[in-house]
Length: 116
Length: 114
Image (cartoon, one colour):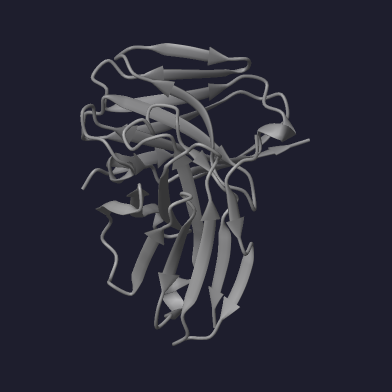
């Protein structure tokens, strides 16, 4: 079965712009989580969606938002981009929240965002 | 803060050598996972350990969960260039559902030189 698909793979944006990233989970998976990965901070949890509802949110400013559609696909949006938002954004899917561990999280290849 | 510290941060070894990566925390976790991430890709789950003192073997990889469930180690025997990547540990708490309760370590970047 197809894995987790993230688009686009690479993105370059200018400071102050906004960006939308997309994630299509594994077929049948209803939970989607987003992470930000940077060399200095490692992997940090952004938010988690299940059945179109945000279940949990990490410690990120309100410029970071997301949503999930009825087909479980998810998007995350970052407004008013800052240089520090440059990172690899990863999406992970699982059948249900909580069922994501142990062993149930599958990550996509990520979107590499560069803010200039 | 549920901090998981990994050591070493960077490791460069010759093919055929053995190595051990450590994951330490002051917090107790109900389960701990190890992932490997290759450049340009997302992390891929290698193993999950859930019992204190548990040892799991995956071919040349041996994973151990500390007795107190605060630490873990990953030992690779006869490393190969294909083992190159970023190794991440991640701890989770029993009964607390959701991805916000999966805490990732700082990572160990391994390079195996042919």
